[in-house]
Image 1: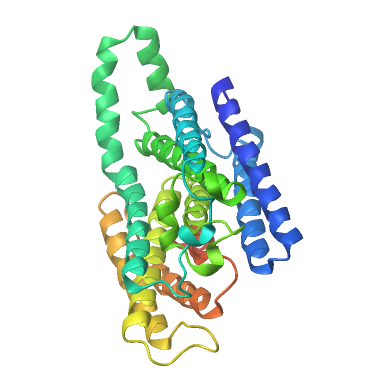
Image 2: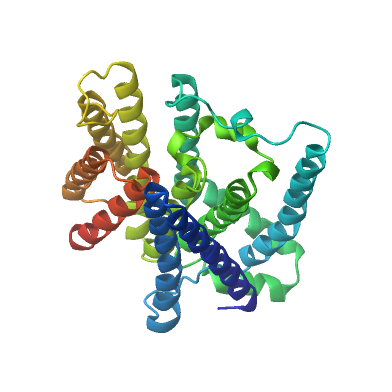
Length: 360
């Protein structure tokens, strides 16, 4: 691992320590739900980084490094620009406190117990951003790769040789897109962590207070926001299973697709036409069944799309979505304290990954 990648990994570990600290605060305050959710997020995040480093640097199971040239450089540049800009936004909030009424969380947090359907829809639509990962893996990533190849002519030979040697472009084109995806998810994590730590520890200085409108009541206070769970879920499965080409990207992309559409459908159908509730929750059996069906159909569609790039066996085309949709349904039925944005992505990808080793 080069020096810059080591610096980036160290920064991510620092964020992991902050995750554990906030988990400790939630336990100290006696918020059991927040503690369970926070500590699980923290463990998954730290373990996934550690396992990735062990696989790459000790066992050499894969030639794909964690983050490598030029994306390690890009991440450092992003950090150098992002933190000063975010600090300025926080400073502006602090300055505005002296010119307005004292901070009151009720002015910025929703007062209703359940999100209105409009905000719930906004919340679910943000999940579709994750689909961009699939396009970067199999479509946009190749465009970016070609862009790099075209501009290499303007650089000294030593740089172009370095680029080609690192990415092994003539060997496996997915290696480049793997680095690109890790880069994009990493800068997203850094942004989300910084913002959510501020929201939790210094809510009066949080510069993105309007976002609180799409947070549910239990997600306020010391609990990590759903975007944190989503980002950690995507990040963890990418650096764990993306190492294994091409099985990793296939499982990651199909799992995320099933998790997203299953969750969106279950929630919206349950909110609009659901009648029969599941135990003492607000979830409904109508939403549960609709989510399972949506996960199954979206899983088949995603695998048919991916089949254009890699040959996927008919047995996995059937078994993968079947098992995946069942997992989505079980997690939805159990209503765990852990945010399903994390559990759906992580458990679904993990189970399908080991199944795919046998039948893909």
